Length: 339
Image (cartoon, rainbow, N blue to C red; front, side, top):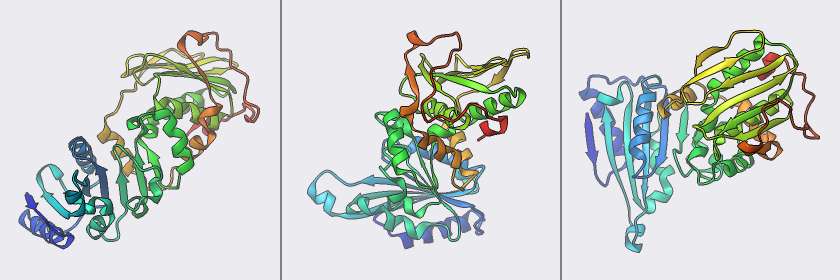
């Protein structure tokens, strides 16, 4: 069911939600959280589609905030809110409210969103693009237990890492970090099979890819060894090589779907390591609302402490670069590599 409201108020939107639930025969509210999307007119469709898919696993009230401040002084001086209320159908067990904030109200979206939050339920705010410099200090971000950004959407994704480190607050996370969950799980599993100390590592991936940088930061932070960041043609992360006394552990994914895992003393095997879509990433983030300490620790390690090499300078002999002066000894246990 869809209800269009023009020049409306938060009270009228709540009344429309109640009316729509009764009309669809589901007056009871069974949603577990409120997901707030902050986007623009050009990107809201894809973001809403991903959120709606994720809400099938986590029934949610989805509030889509589309800011339209206007171009002329007269438009910017006026304040108006239009809304679309959607219950049932593609929204599944949840419900969606698309808010278009015009004029001066676009700068005060907090006041429009606050009355529409589910009572006594967690709040997650997601900025698909154009995230604030400090998400936790943003008025909408201050409402949330979890704040999701995406460095891959930034103009300079790698430079954005330093800004995320400086602005980090418990509850912050980023889809660039979520994308490497399968890589971290696979590498942790491989290290569980080999207890020889890791002496160095190489992470290969395309240029300006924040997920590649974060994976290298995570390895350097957790293993306490020098990690080299090597450029490749992509797509995304293409390989990780861990140097041990027994030989090289290699997880190689040249084409973005199927990877090959090589562990010394064991036959090589193929593992599924496909590139996940946004809906899968959001669904993963909604499974946990507590602070992600592994992400915070990797951010704080600092991308400047990685050795960055172009493909032409990458050696295949497995020799590690000298460790940074403040690097920890390379004597990790396999459990230390798990996120």
